[in-house]
Amino acid sequence: MTRVALMRCKEYRNDLLTDVIARGMAAAGFDMESLMGARVILKPNLLMPTHPDKAVVTHPEFFRAAAMVVLEYGGTPILVENPNFFSLENTLKKVGYGPIMEELGIQVPDPVPTRPLRWEHGKLYRTIDISAAYFDADIILNLVKFKTHSFTYVTGAVKHLFGVIPGLKKSRMHMRVPDQADFADYLLDLYGGLKYGMGPDRQLFHLVDGVRSMEGEGPGPTGSPRDWGVVLAGEDAIAVDWVAVKTAGLDPAKVFTIGQGFKRDFGPNSSEDIQVVGESIQDLACQFTPPKNTIYGGVVWPLTSKTVKNWLVEKPAPNPEKCILCYQCMKTCPAQAIAKAPEGKKVPAFDYRKCIRCFCCMEICPEAAIGLKQGALQWIFSFKQEAK
Ligand code: SF4
Ligand code: SF4
Image (cartoon, helix red, strand yellow):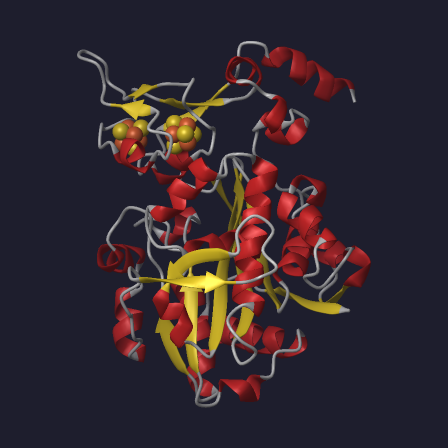
């Protein structure tokens, strides 16, 4: 039985958060004594330099509280993160981590050099290059920001680990594994590698910042912040994600890393193997707005040719009222489907025949200028959904 602690926490207040995090970790079975003398990597979500109220990043107060718990139990907190596109230094400053790093004396190793992570039970990939810094840790604390996600349905504990791959190498992986189910297997290979492939002395543990979360067209600024008042803790990322998704009123069947994860030898083989401690799912249950993307509603990705895909699946569409032509979308697009704006146009040019619908552009756009546009025949699909 895998334990997941589901805790209530309505505010980013340090006294509440440190208490909830320490109690949640212990309740989920984490040996707090193992922190003594340990090098503990804290891996937050620092997708881009945005205000923490927008719920795009792991809140600085959540990070501060986790670091304080590590210090209190005798460990050394280290931050490792590498935003896709923005400089880490600038992102730390803008998100509000700067004073915390100084106050608590937190080390920040260079996340760019990579080292191969090998795991012989990988399904699609047995070797994945990750930031070499993770190999220096005794414990990795995955500080997840729970959000809905236009491509993977949610960003939970498994998806968040994608961030151990430095910078733009992440978006290149979308090109290599564009199919949604394959991408889930790739994420599970990465998770398995971090859990089992780094040797028996390294621990991986997950803490979810759901005090303020995100719903709708996440995980970038296009999504809508939602005050949720929840913190989760657990050793098993798939179990943590199942509890988070159920509590948010979303459908675990639409999170491929959960369904496919249950079928692999990662711990729980079904929700029956998960024990929820602390609060109950029923007591904290609510209804998040899911992402609109119809991939989750029944269009099976491998069956969609480029033309059919353009008819049946939403496409990223830039808004001329908001776009500032910064071209960050163009630089992050793994399919090279975005080009500079033609003369007289106020938005970049999107080539939907090349677009693989990974929504990295939407995720990265600092102006929330990229929305979703329905495919020409999507009304058929909407009808099918309403008729259910
Ligand atoms: S759509 Fe967003 S990321 Fe792309 S150029 Fe416009 S503002 Fe920049
Ligand atoms: S245009 Fe956007 S959604 Fe399409 S492949 Fe490029 S980044 Fe992904």
